[in-house]
Length: 279
Length: 268
Ligand SMILES: Nc1ncnc2c1ncn2[C@@H]1O[C@H](COP(=O)(O)OP(=O)(O)OP(=O)(O)O)[C@@H](O)[C@H]1O
Ligand SMILES: [Mg+2]
Image (tube, rainbow over all chains, first blue to last red; front, side, top):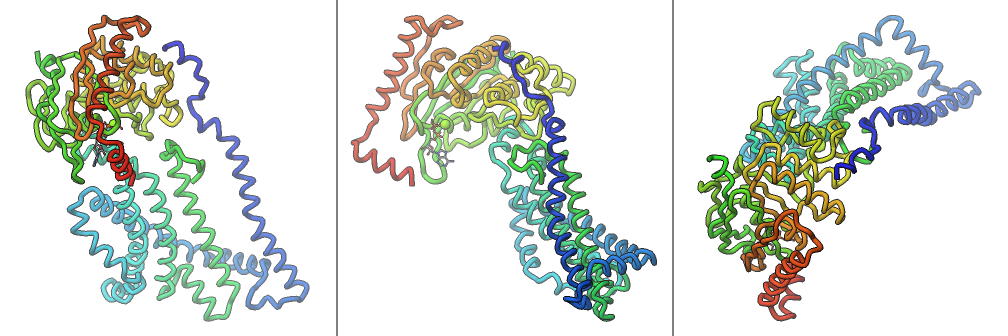
């Protein structure tokens, strides 16, 4: 039977083997993905230049570029982006930590689940924006109340994701841990946590998306800087171009943050035996 | 001396009724001496897996006791390790780490050393850094065996470990298992559907019958090892076991129509 082993041709690291192919696919994907927005932009630009549309309510890309450049040159856009991203970052960290901790607690202990989960679910049923007046009363109108709102938005998907992932961990793998004498704490550390990692990353991505949604809600309800403020300002001044610049900036930031999360998590999820090669 | 007693297994009047009322085992008594290989055979649903899970401490018996080295066990026992029907490797650990996982009580240097030795022993010397998903089913099952043996268990439980493999792979794994058994001399309790497998490996074959699961007969195989599968004596032993299984079925068999309704009830 030992004679069988040397014949095995499989490369020791399938990741490096597949990398060039994936990179080529990746750049092709990029081009395909950009096709629709670029074509739409070109068509709109042409329509405005040819006088088919006024472009007042829907400014063409060239106008947006000029506006964006103006905002960047004065440093205004950077200030707004920094303000928004700081809120998202802190809110995300707090919300994700709390969601992970409570999800682990209620997932690992049936007793904790009976104690905590009904209350958490009830709180979840409150539309999160309804918290705004209370947060402002409690925490003031400045940063703290905004962070609280973003954290709340991030918390629920992460909590739910972690809880259901823990309950869904394969009993068979848990039994392996039990047979080999793992203590309950070690069982969580060595089996439950690695097993839920993929779901956890998905939950974090959902949470991050909601974080962006809630930061906007917080900023629309009163802020002196941030992309939400830029949006509101654009509305009051009748400037569709700055509204659109703010929206596009949101799109770019959201996508960048999500990609960052995926890139960071990819190496630790390489063990997954799934059809999707990329998250 | 502790080595010796830790390898003695006794199942004493064990009964298991599942929460849904299924009586899976009724008054099962079984003893395995240190270093003995016992195989459990019997039709599907006669409680073989249930019995193994009770011994492993993964489920609790409704009555009776499991004794290791004369001591009743509660829950899992450090002397007992197991190979399941599926490899059940942890997909996020490499092959070497999976083997090391079985040696929780070892100091890290020992663990690494033994894992390296076992990797070689199971013919996967260059595969330590592979992930389980990059191994074939037979290779994964070999890793599972290595994982079960790294801690030098007193008692090794196997639940149809080779049933998903082709006959050639199975035969090589029988050799591997016997080779490792000769070195470490654990007491082995192995469930199988394959009569030939039972006769190749076991000192004693325990035939079980279903509904409720009981022991029908115990057959001692007095063939010297290594066993020649083609010898007439081997054939005679095999026939003996098959006859016993047939007998346990026919004496149990309820009227045909009743069996049919039970079958359909089971499916629904
Ligand atoms: N968790 C469970 N809950 C309820 N009934 C169960 C459970 N596990 C097994 N049973 C029942 O107990 C009986 C014995 O099952 P067991 O899995 O031990 O059989 P087995 O001999 O291993 O069968 P096979 O050869 O098909 O693996 C069966 O009737 C089965 O339906
Ligand atoms: Mg079974």
